[in-house]
Image (cartoon, rainbow, N blue to C red; front, side, top):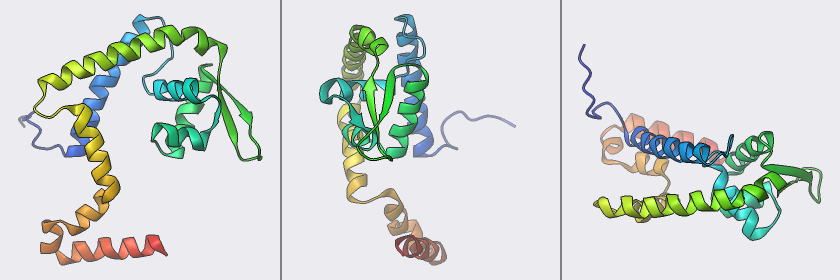
Length: 178
């Protein structure tokens, strides 16, 4: 069996994940080169928010970096395991407040240098593309906030031509609202 390798079998989500994996792997390599063992690219938005805003509960941190509470909680847990943040109880028993550790404060010059170099490289990548990624990705996110992809699937021409498919999605959406 031949392997095509032309993307004929991949969807948009797979392609987006692949691009993110390529970029993340290279940024992680730069971080390792700088001596930041265990530090991952996904930690930087959390660090930047905590530097700018001070200690925050995970829910507020998630809002500040535009991720779900679950994603922020998972990232904070990984950061805590590696000693980059500390958690303390908040005002109520369910709340945990995230603080930068001394280890992270000492690493800030390297973290900030990586962020600046990565931002510069992203701008240069944008210049090569027919649609700047720095403008396209936020535009996609805004469009999906206006109308979620699930709704776009349900409203698609293909779904309209396949009523049983559309009905199953509509029923599932009704069940989720109840």
